[in-house]
Image (cartoon, rainbow, N blue to C red; front, side):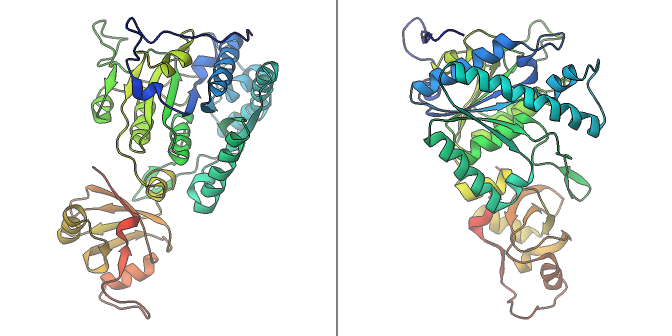
Length: 391
C-alpha cells in the first residue's frame, strides 16, 4: 500500500458538485461482500487495502470514519472449502466464526501498515433494541473516534439467529443485513454521511440488466421514487440487494444524514465521494429527528400494535397531540411499559410507532371500559415526544 494521499478534483470548475456531501465530517463507509470479492468469490485483497488506505487518509484530513464491513461468511466459506454459500443457519454461523477472525486480521494488518489503529465491534439486534445498551454502544463508538481509532463494525453472524419481532404475523427485524446495520450506526451517531459501497454504479431508473436505456439516478430527494424502481434478486454471496440499500438510505436521510450509493469497485471511490464529485446516487438529507425519536423510529423492534379510531388519528396528525386511552380501539401483543409499538388506523393503515407508557393489559382494560387502579381515563398511552409518525 502506498502512503501517498491522492487528491481528486471536484470537477472542471474546481467546485464540488455536491458541497453538502463534501462538507461531511463524520462518515460511515459500508463495504459489501461483492466489493471485497472477485466475481468467482475469491478475496479482492487490493480493494480491501484500498478501503483501509482511504479511511486513514480521510481520518488524517480530520474526518471521523467508521467502517461497516461484510465478507466474514464468504471468507469462512473459502477457508472451509465450501463450493456454495451455506443455507442453514448453523453452517452460516460456522463460516462467520472462521471468516470473522480472518477478515479482522486483514483489516488490522492494513491499518497497522499505515500506523493507524482500528477496533473490532461485533453487534447484534439486542445492542440496538435495548435502550441502555444502545446508549452504551453510542458512548463506546464516540470514545473510539475520540482516540482516533477507526471502528470496524460487523453483525455478529456467528451467534445471530436473525430473530424477528412478530406483530400481527408481520416479521420486523431491526437489521437483517449490513446495509441496515450501517444506517442504524449512522443514525445512532448523528453521522453526516453514509456511503454504501456495492458492485454497481448506483440506483437506476430501470433495471439495467434488462433495459440498456436505464439511466443512473444521480440525485434523489424523495427515497420513495427510488424505492419504486429498486428491486432485483440478491446475490448468492450477500444478503442485501439494491432495495435493501435504498430502504437503508431512506432511514438515514430522516436523521439528517446524506447517503451515497456507489460502486466500491471504482478506483478511489471514497475520495471522489468525499470530494463532492457527481458519482453514484446521492440521497439528500432531510431535517433530522431528535436522538430519542431516532431510536424509536429505527433501532428497536416492535412489541405490539395499537389500533386507533378516526378521532385519535386526527389528533395525532393534525394537532400533534399525545395518544390518549379513549382513542385506542384495541391492543395486540404482550408489550410492557417502555416498549415500542406500531400505531395503525381504522383501516389498518400504518401511522407510525411510539413508546408506550403502560403495558398491554392496562390498555386492554381501558378499551373494555375498566379503569385500572392508579390510572386515569385520559392517560397518555404514548406521549407526543415519544411518537414518530410516518410522513
